[in-house]
Each structure stands twice: as structure tokens, then as C-alpha cells.
Amino acid sequence: SHPAAPRQTTPLCIKRAAMSLASAARVSAARLAMRPRPLRPPAFAGTLARRWQSTVQPPAAEVPLEAALPASDIPAAMPSAPFVGSVPWAIKFEFSDGTKRHAFQSWLHTLPELRRRHGPVYRMGLPGLGNPGSPSFIINDPREWMKILRSEGSHPFGGVESTWPLRTWLEARQNPTRMLMGNGEEWKRMRVPMQRDLLAPKPAAGYVPCMAEAAMLASKAAASQAADMEVFLSRASFDLFSAILLGRSMGAATGSGRDVDLKFCEDTLNALRMSTPMQQDLWEILCHKVFKVETAKLTQLMHLLDEAFFYARDCTKALIAKRDAAAAGGPALTSAEANSYLIQSLEHRDPEKDNITEDELKEVILLTLFASVDTTASLIGWCFVQLAKAPHVQEKLRAELTSVLGDRPADSAELLDRTSLPYLNAVIRETHRVSPSVPMFPKITTEDLVIAGRRLPAGSPCLMDTYGLCQDESIVGPDVREFKPERWLPEAVAARQGTPQEIMDHRLLATPFSAGARKCPGSRVASLELRCFLATFIRDWRISLAPGEEEHFDGCLPRYKQGTTIVPAPMPRFELSTVAKE
Image (cartoon, rainbow, N blue to C red):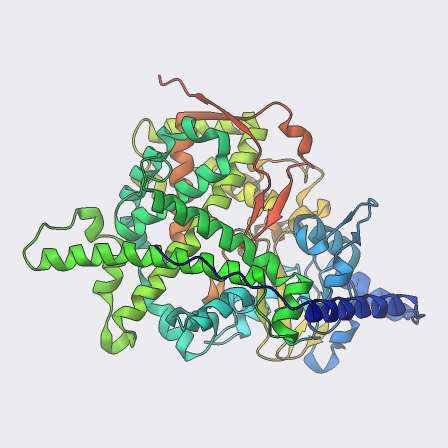
């Protein structure tokens, strides 16, 4: 057992000072809004119109760097202030339909709205990204974003660098994985051995049999867990990745897991879903960056992270001890354990080339178990939501899975061959289009670049919006608010080639895993987990929304919340019925 987290409170004087500072920021914003602004000259109006069209039609010629407009000419989506960015103005952001929402807690509504208003690039202040007071540039044209990826060099900026609550904990504990929060040589030293047995196709394919078994066990237990599908999916995701990491399912989703396994899932989810809102919480930002005070919420987060990592260390130590005992003549590891990510990574470590100690590598591997729970659960959860809302799509998917896989486990060659299950691919792609778990990726430019005709200086924080364009009726079509996987079948994609609409097939819009050197290192195994679980579950169960649940939907979107990923909140209530086997 571990000691309970100490309860800390923030001095009243600091709270009052923070409230005064926040109030001053709002007053400053009001004055800015009242200040008369010069009208833009007609020449700029023409330029803006041409740039807006460039999201559908490629520009005729690239603007030379010396002829580009300054970055200050990029439209501002909302005002900004040092440290707090645009947070005070985002709290009650007014949408075109008259509703008011917190813009930074409603990105799936905010991003399409801001694209309609401002076009392919605009700016605002996002705390934690870049220097205090500097604007962030949101870009929703993937062709423009490719310029940033091509110029980022061997030590690119990654999104984890802006997660100051997690970085604070890693620094406080002097955890070796804190190097992964940077982008220098130390980051590269940690990253390369970490991703070797996750991103490469051959090692990833080797995890599928154990993954399929974990999916089968979880699916069989679904009926007893259906009352709280959010908890079930987080536990199923934990079982899937523990099968990859350790070579065995922990049984969390089946109810056969230990209490400590279930507590790990709960602590991990709570920590991850606290972290991102904290990054944008005005009070937390001021306490951390201005007053240098640890709030009660940050203390709670750090305690949850401590508990999760204590558990993960115990799991890895047990398997390593079993490996060492086997080497000394004891019982051998099972085939799944011997082929697990943990054992393979340790065996493939080259002390001379990798320049990473075994203890450091163990800590890096722990981080993958921690990060895997929320990501896979959100991907599966959104697929469940869309398939339950569109029963005709679900039946079509079930027919394909049954025709190709029959009653075999989801570890067959067809699952690995993406051409064998085109409708499964299309369902996953369309789910990402209408309800992405991660709709934006951050970067910081490493050199001066021309983006949509404007000159962005080196060091500019940028965000790739992969969602706004996919909700544009002029690109997707009049059925943009419908869940329609058929738009991603090979014949539909081929029909778009050579038209303005082919931009929706750009690879940067296809997944929630980013791209380039900072692409999610677990992206390949996460995709396999998703395909494996859906291929198993949809053949076992018919999933539908409980009565009254559809009333809470706005098009394809139910209510949602934002943590490390965007998830339905609360998760809709589902009803499960068994699929009759022929």
C-alpha cells in the first residue's frame, strides 16, 4: 500500500490575486473589442477570398517568402493575453446559431465554426503552447501543414511537450521518461528503442494472436458489463494492451481481474482526463506559471500518477523475474510472454547503438501501458456510438466480417491484410471523420515558412485541425452530417481523384495518430487492437442505443468531454443482443 496523497490548499491571498489578474484580462479584452479597427483594404479582401478557395482548389503558385504577408495579417479568432491566452474569451464563446459554449471544451463544435469564419488559417492564444503571450496558428489545410512537417528536422516538437501537468510530475519524480517530453538528443535516445517493436509491421503482427484472445474473452463478458460501457471499454483496452506488453490478458474486462488491476484502470483514466482540462484551466495556469504554487488538483493528479506507475512497475518486474528464473533453469515463459513487447524490447536493446540502460527502457515501456488505456478505449467507444446509431451500417459490417472471417478468431491473415475488409476500414475512417478522439496536433515551426500566403516566423506554435475540413459541406457533400462509410470505399475514393474533393483523402486527415517523427509510437498496435476488437465484438453482439439516448445527439455527436482524448460523456446507454450463429 502507499500513503494517501497529502491535502494541500492554496493561500487565500494568491486566490484573490489570481482572480484580480483574470478580471483585469477580461477588462482588457472588452477594451480591445470596443477599440475602433481600420477597415481592411479591398486588395486584402481579394487575397482572403483566394486563400479561402485554396482549401478546395490548390493555389496557382506558391508565394515567395519575401513577398508573403506578415503573420499579424492572419485573422484572429479571439483576443489573447499573456499566460492565459484566449481562455477568458473562450469561456462563453458565441456560435453562429446563437448558443454559447466554452470553445476550448467543445472543439468538435468550435473547429468547423472557426473554419467557416476565418478560412484555412487563423490565430488565438492557447496556454502551454509556445511562449506566454505568443499566438498559436490553427491550420486546417493539410497541404499547408505538410510544409511544417517537411521542415521540422530530426528533433521536432511533439504534443506531449505542452502537457505541463504531466511534465511537472515527471520532473518532480526525476523519472527518466521526462526526456520524452522534450525534443533534443535525449528525446531521440529514448524514442528510438521505444518505438522499434511497436511501429515495425513484423513485431506488431506478432502480438495479434494474444490480442485476439484478449478481445474474445472481453467480448464474452460484455453482457455482464454493459451497464457501464465506458468502464468496460477502458478495462477491455487495458486487457488488449497488457496482452501485447506482458503476453497475457489481466482479465479486467471479464471481472476476473484483481482489485489492483481494476484500480490501475480507474487511476489511469482519472489522471488522463484531469490532465488536459487542467492545461486550459485559468486558475491552474496562473498558480503554476505565475505564482509557482501546487494546487490541490495538481496534488491529486500527481498522486494518481504515482499509484498508476507503482502498479505498472510491479507488473513488469514480475515478468522480468519470470524471464530470469527461466534462464536459470526454472519454468519457461509461455510463447505469448516470450513474444511480448516487454521481453522483445529488452532483448533487442543494443547497449552500444541504443545508448539506453535497461532500467531506462523499462520506465519508457511503463509509459506505454499508462498511455494505452484511454486512447484505445476512446477509439472503440466512438465506433460503438456510430454503429449503434446506424444499425444498417452495423449489419453491413457484420455481413462482411462473417463472410471473410467466419467463426475464426480475429487473428487471421485477413485482419492484417487491409484490402480484405474494406467496409471495416471504411467504418473506422468515417468514425474518425465525424467523431475524432484527437482532432488536433501541435507543432512549433523550426524556420520561417509561408502558410496560406502569410509568413510564419521560426518558433511559431501551430495546430493542425484535422476536423474542420472534414465537416465542410463544399468538400464532403450535402450529406456531411450523416455517418456514411461508403464514402471511403475504394471506388468512391477513386471517383474523387482529380477533383477539389480529393483533399478529404489526404493522409494527414485519416487517423488520430499525427504524422512524422512525432507520430504516436503505438499507432500501429492501436489500429490492430481496434480492428481486432471490432471484428470480434460485432460478430458476437448486436449493439443499439437504449430508448431516449438519441435525443442527446447533435447530428452524429452525442455529448462529449475532453481529456487526453475526446470521449462521449456520459457514454450513451447501450443494449446488447446476441447474434445468432448460422
